[in-house]
Image 1 (tube, rainbow, N blue to C red):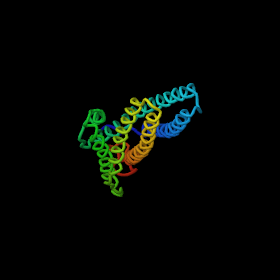
Image 2: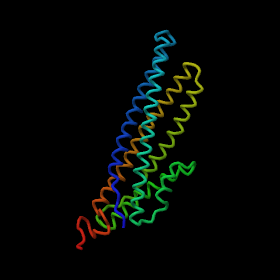
Image 3: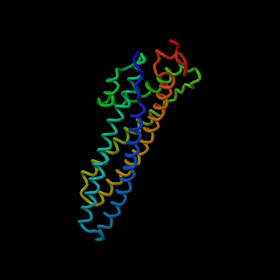
Image 4: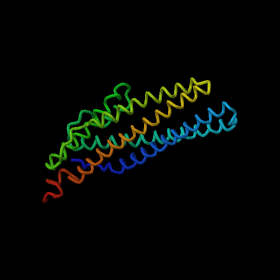
Length: 231
């Protein structure tokens, strides 16, 4: 039987990156709010064209930094998720998908609306089931609503951000730019909420993974909690 592969370091990396993303979201909220104030003042000659252009450059820097952090976070999250799912497969738990199949569920159009919820629920519930087999004192928690809320908010924010991007691309007047910025502000705030639930999901699953490892580093060598079988 394969050993359970440690996933704690990966979860720490993802949590740090999610914190960074939340910081950039809040930074973007403050920046867009300030940019709106500047645009309103520009109409009355309070700011120069050069100042407006510098703000645009700064906006690009913030956006590119956020996007780079987002890509890194996605990669690390998928690595963490894949190992969490794969560990259960290596423990001969009957899983609905293969290790790679669970990951592709995040990228296949339409399927990626629902499969991430199913596979994350699988990890959360079946990890508890394995622990329960070796530790009868574990209180089995079947409540997975927080997983649904996490993914639904994430999807909703994707639509909001897409709408904000289209609004900005169509904007030709100051009022339209301000309106698009307001949508971005709303999107960033929703994203912070989404990140909060993502952190909650990872923390809950990671806690179970830690309990599972402490329960049994190798299920073939341990027959009860913290007591190695005599050989």
